[in-house]
Image (tube, rainbow, N blue to C red; front, side):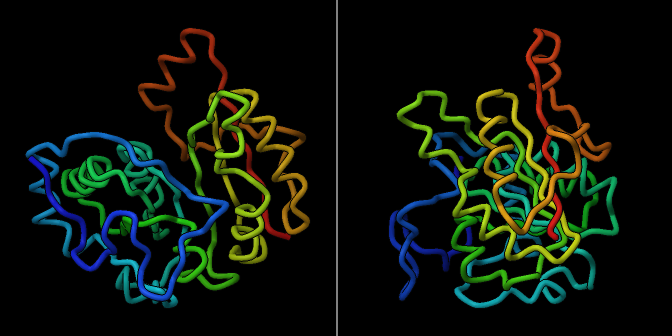
Length: 241
């Protein structure tokens, strides 16, 4: 069974009127997948409250969340397991979550309903355009980017999300003292993340190199399996100067 995201989003491959897709950066890659019956029901019952529509205009976060609270942007939440956990253990924060993978959006909506979460809003749109057109400078208290696609092959490295242009956009939208937290299980990508984040003049590292895993980020089933096999996981936490 499948369902639709908000009806006013642009059709596949078409930018909103007057807004061009970024040529150098995109925050996602379309993935195949089927929306389950439970996810489809979550779209129907919870979508009107928790899904936001893309607009080429600044977001009124207080109105979107029905309260004023620190705003954390998450880029690419997969199936939403970690997102729901973090929102549950940090009820004082608002989480604006960008993901275009429809089954993942449905899965997070389902978790929201099952866990009674109220501090998540999902924006099913390219996060780069959201940054460019909906989030003003100094509007974010934090950014989460967990396990983005590492694009293992060297010829594909240019497609990695963590690149200087995106990091500059993120840094500009962080309030002074706000943070960006990235995590990856691919060491060469961790090294690139460390170099790129470290080269951004508006950011400073909170650790000497990689950071200890913050308590709020849970170990996912995938991550636990990898750790048992001896695979590493690297967290990076930088703050806005």
